[in-house]
Amino acid sequence: MRYYEVEFSVSPKGDGLQDARDLIAAMAGEAGFEAFEETDGGTKGYVQVALLNRAALDNLKNNFPMPGMTVSYNIKEAEYRDWNEQWEQEGFEPITICDRCCIHDGRHLPQSHYDITITIDAKLAFGTGTHETTRMIVARLLAANMAGKRMLDCGCGTGILAIAALKMGAAMAVGYDIDEWSVDNSLHNAQVNGVADRFEALQGDASAIGRTGGKFNVVAANINRNILLADMPRFCEAMADGAILLLSGFYESDAAAITRQAESLGLRQTHTSGDGGWACLEFRKGGATE
Image (tube, rainbow, N blue to C red; front, side, top):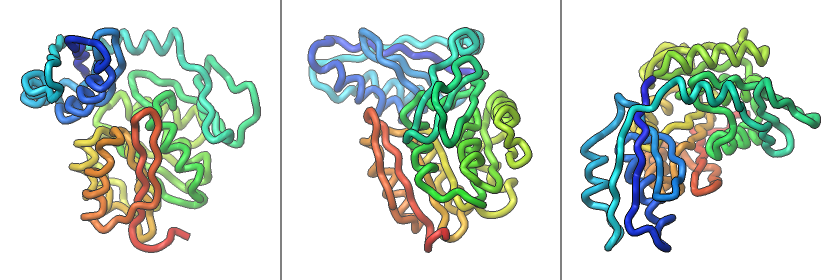
């Protein structure tokens, strides 16, 4: 999957820089952007080449809603090679979630005992546990009773959410992703973690859900706001009675829109959490899962 790297510059910077960054991220989400990092002059964002909405990007520049502040951007194609080499050379430090689960790579091993350990080799796929959205969904999986459940991981990336569910006792998990690299990486990580016999990965968008066969007790999606809004009806169709839907990948300011869509589909909200401006919402379909 090919990505654009877009550097947004704010002028003047001053005291309103952080507010400007937050607005850029919110508006860039409408243009298809998935990830951001702060820079001295503003924000750097990443968007799949095929998903970039240039009209929405130009609207951000031409109609930025902070009086007296302007935004410019510079766009270039991000290189697969750079991202992969960084992970190969540096990896990431172990991440602890709820004092029970430790996510680590093969180079940085846990220094203490945990109920659940997950090894992730991130090869051109997102999802290592370093991001707030991943950590919040894993925390909700830890809070649920996963024993014997069927789990669907939408936009699986490295497969981390499916692998976490399987290590927590899920009977089986299916993941899908539009990126063939992610599908291959998730299968690799399932093998590394000893759960490959209970995991299946499919390439495709949400239409791949129709190939999963049967209903799911837990559906998780860590994707950007626009894709969640578009794909939520398919998520709902795949949920068994009493199933839970875990959603993240969007800002707290977008939670109301996500909630409205879920409630319009007959889901009821059962939990909300936030971390660093990012949100995680949990919904239930029908009755109890037990």
